[in-house]
Image 1 (cartoon, helix red, strand yellow):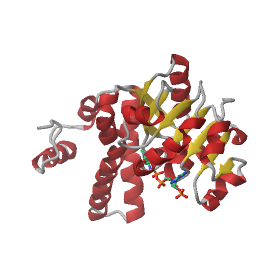
Image 2: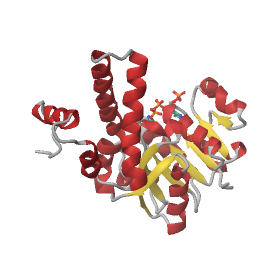
Image 3: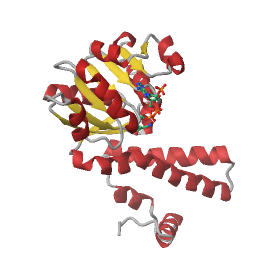
Length: 252
Ligand SMILES: NC(=O)c1ccc[n+]([C@@H]2O[C@H](COP(=O)([O-])OP(=O)(O)OC[C@H]3O[C@@H](n4cnc5c(N)ncnc54)[C@H](OP(=O)(O)O)[C@@H]3O)[C@@H](O)[C@H]2O)c1
């Protein structure tokens, strides 16, 4: 369990999910998390678990070792500029805000404050996020701490900041792409005879199993595809039809 005090500025969907995940995983004590937003009435669930709820961002920042901003991009400049005089040496600033570059953060907070940009996805709510991070002015120990924090909420990988937009597409938008694929399978499942609930379960669990084969067994997709592709069988017929309809495994 970490003893660092974490202030989450912007307790909306993502900020609250991060707080819940840090609590659920046992990474942080409730008393070591402060979460802020202007309308704190929506943070009752976290309050009931003992998390500090605060409408004053300044108080949260003055108290914290780690400051994580989970604001909408258009709020960042104003909020951070107001907090700038309160940042103290040793504090780490983490931003999960889409499209705000480390350079932008540096321009607002100035100096050489350790800065980390993290791009999680919505599966963070169930501790299954893919989170890409990059950093500037942060020590190895500080980066390791941030990695271990996001590792409680899924899997973390360090990337170069120039790949952050690509990480957004592959990791964050990727959730939607995967879900659209699953939805198509559900519709197909209903067409061939399953009720919606059963089709939903079979489609989702099958995709989960396919992903786990790659993650746990570190296999290549084609290796696993070969295993289910019998000559003259229905798998190859389906794969060929997918290609004929435009779902190709080679990007053009
Ligand atoms: N959702 C995701 O899975 C995901 C994934 C990757 C990145 N992101 C990024 O994460 C950021 C947050 O996304 P979200 O979906 O959590 O948005 P959200 O639900 O709108 O959360 C933003 C929160 O900021 C609070 N806020 C606004 N002004 C504030 C201020 N001055 N001081 C303190 N809090 C303030 C708002 O509450 P009040 O109005 O009550 O203050 C709101 O609850 C976005 O930049 C998004 O691009 C999200």
